[in-house]
Length: 458
Image (cartoon, helix red, strand yellow):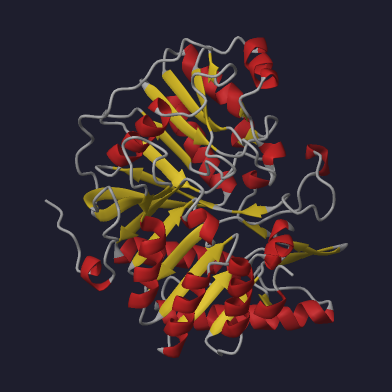
């Protein structure tokens, strides 16, 4: 029997989480889309009973690694073998940000599925003007072969990038320097007891999908079936304690009348407990409460390294007039006064200039003891508006290996033999030197490149 590690005392789990921390899991972070989607697609291809997927953003022509074809090809292949395939798509009702890269419940989506003679079931789920932002896969639920994937990677062409972030192929339709053409992102493979919570979350959303009774809100219309709640999961298969944490608005689903806001709580608990370092990769770093917690950590002598996109989504600058966002910009700028803080925007030099590597990851590691991977951005709308899912885990060996994988890619040096604080200090040096090199028009060492916090996303 695997027992909960001491790290749960040092970095406690959130009291507001619905699902408990579960021991006995195998947890494997998957860094960058080429690697993650290869593993996900392989699991779908091997499925024998079921495939369940929560989809937020989707480009219908994005192709999976290894010549596997599109998302629809992958789902059709599983269904053709008799596998029960269920897909939950976000219906971007009244949502104006990035909604062009979705697959909404509309007549045109129905025509696409009908033209393919799609035999699997789909439902669409909206959340007002907010986003159904979870990105989760569950294969062979409830069997000994059950495997879940939880993270933040969208099904888009740019999200299929490898760890080398090679220049995107113009034959895929990319233009030079296009914002979302070269994406850095993370998903997480998990086997073991915690997968039942991914299953329960899917059942809750599937059965309560907002558009399921509306024309074009399900496929095939009027012939999708509700799911039964999971009654048993898989046994212990590893040594990692893990927990599914979510952001869900109150009243959105009958099972959660009070909603859930455990991702925010967990971030604050982990940052407050940090002694050596906090490493963050996130698409949006504009949660004032998180930034204030990071400032307090810096005051305690903790090193804080954060990686964000150097060419962030323009909606962030446009929202600066919002009082909450403006306060967050001020809190981020204030961190620039601390020597122990480094804000990095990864990029790489091409023949034509410098290309930004778009950070879409939503991850954090603290003190080589705790880590989280998921769909939740560090902004108030992800905590209290969008529907999100993260997996947090307490395992020094896995957390250290995950930190080393991220740092090695960003810094271009081997850090697995370093303690976390030493690795952070070295990465900061690389990022600051790369900033100097970029200003001088020189080659860079790996990707990390320091930027001024006060000038980000403005």
